[in-house]
Amino acid sequence: MAPASAPAPASAPASVGAAGEPVVPAQAAPRGAVRSAEPAQRHARPVITELRLSAFGRHRSAAFPLGPVTLFAGPSGSGKSQALAAYGALAALGAGATLDEAFPDAGTRIPDRALPDAQRRRGFRLGCTVDGPAGPVRLDLAVQAEPTLRIVGERLSQNGQILFATALRDPGRRSVQAAWLTGGAVGVTRAPLPDDRLGTALLPLRVAGSTAGQRQVLAAAEQVVVALRSVFACDPRPDRMRAPVPRGEGRLLADCANLADVLRRTRHECGTRHTLLAEAARTGCAGPVAGLDVREPEGGHVSAVLDRGPGRPATDLARLGSGELRFLALALVLLTGPGVLDMDPAAELLSARQALTVLADGFDHGLDGSQSAELLRLALLSCGRGHVRLVAAVGEGTAAAARRLPGVSVVDLSV
Image 1: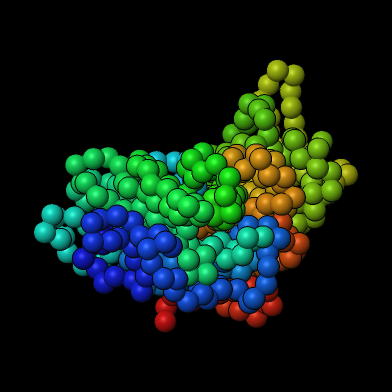
Image 2: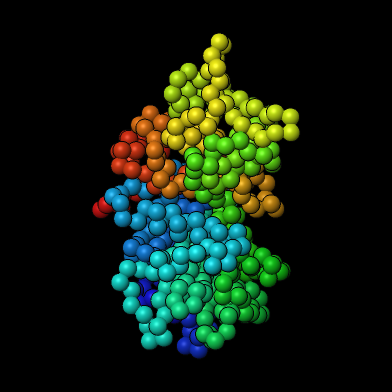
């Protein structure tokens, strides 16, 4: 069923038979292969190469290809933040979050001017394509936002073949009917799944992998989950970054409030990257910068300072401008990896086989042109190795500069 009375996308999130059963490959002929969001290539690490917003906020039938560095640009109200919010919500669901946790403001994601159906239901549709060792895999999701937040349809497909699908059969139950490819004499396995969690993320716990069909389903599901879990949404808050912080694990929070503690850790454990960050600070911070140092009084809190060189007093980070603090935090994220970020990547896969994706809404907020240019340089440096990807929303000034840079994809939402 469609969760909103908005126009249906070209392919619904879950095919449903006449009896309300999810349609799987044994019941439906495969459709044509899906267009890849990036030039034909096999990615060594699972990465999201396309974000689809079939009916989400102000977006209708939208498909955004995503490269190693992708910047969303456009005037205020064009949907930049909504696109990043959709990406972040999919990542949260892939990490095991409930719908309430992934969409705390689900009502605002209902398409503009969408009318309720006869049962007063409205909702939204979104999805993505994940490329990796298993090849391109599509995930499509239909969510009912009113009157009750729930998943009403989900589909995992590859090359036009549906590997896994769910459909809402009984609105009175908090479950959906799921079906996935088994192969052999059985063909299809059916089971109920909760309607408030991403079914794809639950498949590794439900599918044995004893048949070729099951192994195909598992490979596709695990690739999607790895890509979704390898996301770090970063929103530096300078007002929270100025005060000394307790010594902790040195894992950067989303608001970067514990920047000083993370700098303490990188100084001791990641000397090369800490040096690169100090070099970047010479561009992003006013005045001479000889290095980044940390003060850690016995039994006290940790604070960070800019080393101004011989004969000059150091400058506490608390005295830096908001743009300087945002710059340092974003540069740190781009130069490091999941090990120093407060995130939960797939533990069963080596970090070398995962690609970190940094989400940054308002990437250039409060930054001047030289700071934005330096961050783009760092992004291209890090993303060029294949270990890091950046998806960000930027202002027109940064977008104009980025359009001249090879390797940067700019999605213009003003057209």
